[in-house]
Image (tube, rainbow, N blue to C red; front, side, top):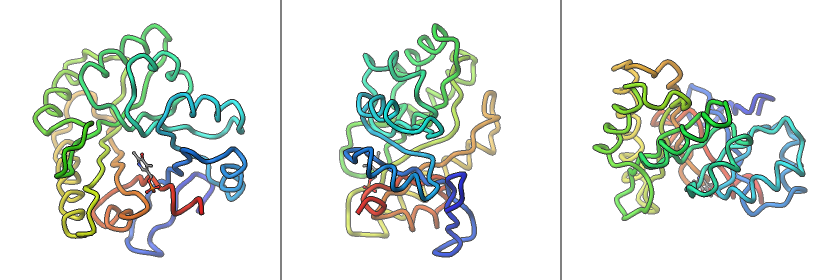
Length: 218
Ligand SMILES: *Cc1c(COP(=O)(O)O)cnc(C)c1O
């Protein structure tokens, strides 16, 4: 792992690098410091309150990412403290993020979470909704938001071919959007997919950011 949080995945499975988000939800500050001391600087939490508490306790050079569903009443508190929100999952949330970022005079970096799992998952855009959200964004309606890319979670299944095809599907959507090079897409370059159980497949299918918890904190 290099100091910028990128793991050299070439050693394992593939020829490109992926940024590692160390998922520290439910872990103590002491456990996080062990990973920090190895050089890791990007940590991901799925609850706003936990992220804020840990940010206060831990070194200031940690880059905090929110990876879990964001409740609307937590947006205001979260914004000054988060580097990237992986879980922008509705048009209502995007509007609110833009509004609050404007009030706080900052820009908020987000990934649009896309529903790729077959199972009924609660959160994420369908492909049709994603297109609507991007159309609104590209029309300039969210000047305080920077859409940095996409995030997805594969089905929880032992069938690795199902997982692979879901990741491949999201990669295709991601590449199509890059090629369309629409308005506001200058910084669209992050594909966040893969967790402890499936990050190797995700990287093979084009992820450049992986979110790993249990494998790191043992
Ligand atoms: C918990 C979590 C992870 C990490 O899961 P592990 O299986 O522990 O690696 C990744 N992404 C999201 C959105 C999570 O909530």
